[in-house]
Amino acid sequence: MPSIGHPLAYHDAGTPLTGVLYRGEAEQQTRPGILLIHGGAGLDDHARDQAQRWAALGYVVLACDMYGDGVAGDRQRIMSCVTALRDDPATLVTRARAGLDALRDCPDTDGRFAAVGFCFGGMAALTLARSGEGIAGAVSIHGSLTTPAPAQPHTVRAKILACHGASDPHVPPADVTAFTQEMEDARADWQLIMYGGALHGFTHRHTQPGATPGVAYDERADRRSFATASQFLAEAFTEQTA
Image (cartoon, rainbow, N blue to C red; front, top):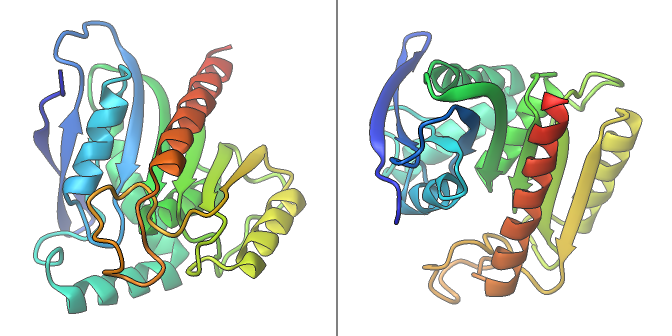
């Protein structure tokens, strides 16, 4: 049975934000928390669906709000917000940490946390990991791999998983090569999984074919990436406990 989402209001300095918290209603014991970071469109049905998917595994999941009121649904405001956050990693990290702090305050979490993001959210999850945040893991699913502030050696504490569509024109091979070199130079514990033939946004099952160039749903990549990410986080959370 899908978990029921409950609005959760929090703030990043003077910016009011409203996420949606999901947790198994029958669960009683404390358990790890996942910060689910939405794509460029904002906290939409895709983000909520993905949050429920992770909550069904027993995690406490906060589908966070990276934009604030009055942005989602307005393309011009979305692009302005995405660009500002992309170009200012420190502000992006602060915004993501606001959601992480709200999740940490949930009484049924057990002190172990991870970030999972899609598209823009994947970039945000990786940026959070690059900052040295002490989360168990950061998962980017069809997210941007570039950054104006590459990780420095021995600063990445989270385990990293990037799930990438091999045919994604929005994240070209040069970006993939640069990311792998960055992770190696940083001495990070990282993995990159590439799905042959998959385009950008391969988890968006309601995408209309051809509606956006380079974007398409891929059932196989969607299914495989979720399975890989699930195993990855289960291991990361276990190792953080040990």
